[in-house]
Image (cartoon, rainbow, N blue to C red; front, top):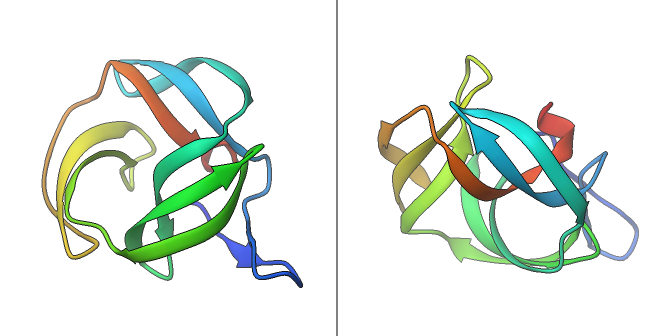
Length: 105
Protein backbone atom coordinates (compact mmCIF):
# COMPACT_ATOMS: atom_id res chain seq x y z
CA UNK A 1 0.00 0.00 0.00
CA UNK A 2 1.08 3.54 -0.57
CA UNK A 3 2.08 5.64 2.37
CA UNK A 4 -0.05 8.72 2.90
CA UNK A 5 0.34 11.70 5.18
CA UNK A 6 -1.61 14.88 5.73
CA UNK A 7 -0.40 18.34 4.83
CA UNK A 8 -1.11 21.34 7.06
CA UNK A 9 -4.58 21.74 5.50
CA UNK A 10 -5.71 18.19 6.27
CA UNK A 11 -5.35 17.01 2.65
CA UNK A 12 -3.90 13.54 2.24
CA UNK A 13 -0.59 13.80 0.40
CA UNK A 14 0.50 10.86 -1.75
CA UNK A 15 3.98 11.39 -3.22
CA UNK A 16 3.72 11.17 -7.01
CA UNK A 17 -0.03 11.83 -6.99
CA UNK A 18 -3.12 9.80 -7.85
CA UNK A 19 -3.79 8.99 -11.51
CA UNK A 20 -6.08 6.93 -13.76
CA UNK A 21 -3.96 4.12 -15.20
CA UNK A 22 -4.33 1.32 -17.72
CA UNK A 23 -3.15 -1.90 -16.09
CA UNK A 24 -2.06 -5.07 -17.88
CA UNK A 25 -1.77 -8.31 -15.89
CA UNK A 26 -1.68 -6.35 -12.64
CA UNK A 27 0.91 -3.73 -13.59
CA UNK A 28 0.52 -0.14 -14.88
CA UNK A 29 1.14 0.14 -18.63
CA UNK A 30 0.15 3.82 -18.98
CA UNK A 31 -0.98 6.53 -16.54
CA UNK A 32 -2.57 9.86 -17.39
CA UNK A 33 -2.14 13.18 -15.62
CA UNK A 34 -3.31 13.96 -12.08
CA UNK A 35 -6.78 12.54 -11.38
CA UNK A 36 -9.80 14.48 -10.11
CA UNK A 37 -12.92 12.67 -8.87
CA UNK A 38 -13.61 9.92 -6.34
CA UNK A 39 -11.27 7.02 -5.64
CA UNK A 40 -10.85 4.15 -3.19
CA UNK A 41 -7.57 4.76 -1.37
CA UNK A 42 -5.63 3.20 1.50
CA UNK A 43 -5.44 5.35 4.62
CA UNK A 44 -4.34 4.25 8.10
CA UNK A 45 -4.35 0.57 7.13
CA UNK A 46 -7.89 0.51 5.66
CA UNK A 47 -9.60 1.57 2.43
CA UNK A 48 -11.78 4.70 2.19
CA UNK A 49 -13.76 6.47 -0.53
CA UNK A 50 -11.96 9.77 -1.09
CA UNK A 51 -12.51 13.00 -3.02
CA UNK A 52 -9.43 13.65 -5.18
CA UNK A 53 -8.46 16.97 -6.80
CA UNK A 54 -5.53 17.15 -9.22
CA UNK A 55 -3.95 13.96 -7.87
CA UNK A 56 -4.31 14.77 -4.16
CA UNK A 57 -6.93 13.27 -1.84
CA UNK A 58 -8.76 16.20 -0.24
CA UNK A 59 -11.27 14.39 1.96
CA UNK A 60 -11.83 10.72 2.80
CA UNK A 61 -15.12 9.31 4.03
CA UNK A 62 -15.67 6.32 6.32
CA UNK A 63 -14.54 2.76 5.71
CA UNK A 64 -15.40 1.51 2.21
CA UNK A 65 -17.49 -1.57 1.41
CA UNK A 66 -17.61 -2.76 -2.21
CA UNK A 67 -15.19 -3.71 -4.99
CA UNK A 68 -11.97 -1.89 -5.82
CA UNK A 69 -8.63 -2.41 -7.54
CA UNK A 70 -5.93 -2.54 -4.87
CA UNK A 71 -2.18 -3.12 -4.76
CA UNK A 72 -1.22 -6.49 -3.33
CA UNK A 73 1.83 -7.10 -1.11
CA UNK A 74 3.77 -8.60 -4.02
CA UNK A 75 3.33 -5.35 -5.97
CA UNK A 76 0.69 -6.27 -8.56
CA UNK A 77 -2.91 -5.03 -8.64
CA UNK A 78 -6.02 -7.18 -8.21
CA UNK A 79 -9.76 -6.56 -8.04
CA UNK A 80 -10.84 -7.10 -4.44
CA UNK A 81 -13.98 -7.22 -2.35
CA UNK A 82 -13.77 -4.90 0.66
CA UNK A 83 -15.90 -4.92 3.80
CA UNK A 84 -15.59 -1.97 6.19
CA UNK A 85 -12.26 -1.01 4.62
CA UNK A 86 -10.71 -4.49 4.84
CA UNK A 87 -9.94 -6.89 1.99
CA UNK A 88 -12.09 -10.01 2.14
CA UNK A 89 -11.35 -11.59 -1.26
CA UNK A 90 -9.20 -10.78 -4.33
CA UNK A 91 -9.07 -12.01 -7.90
CA UNK A 92 -6.38 -11.06 -10.33
CA UNK A 93 -4.03 -9.98 -11.63
CA UNK A 94 -6.21 -7.10 -12.85
CA UNK A 95 -6.30 -5.90 -16.46
CA UNK A 96 -8.26 -2.72 -17.16
CA UNK A 97 -8.43 0.90 -15.99
CA UNK A 98 -8.10 1.93 -12.35
CA UNK A 99 -7.33 4.99 -10.24
CA UNK A 100 -4.16 4.30 -8.22
CA UNK A 101 -1.61 6.20 -6.10
CA UNK A 102 1.54 6.68 -8.17
CA UNK A 103 3.77 6.36 -5.09
CA UNK A 104 2.96 2.63 -5.13
CA UNK A 105 5.22 2.12 -8.13
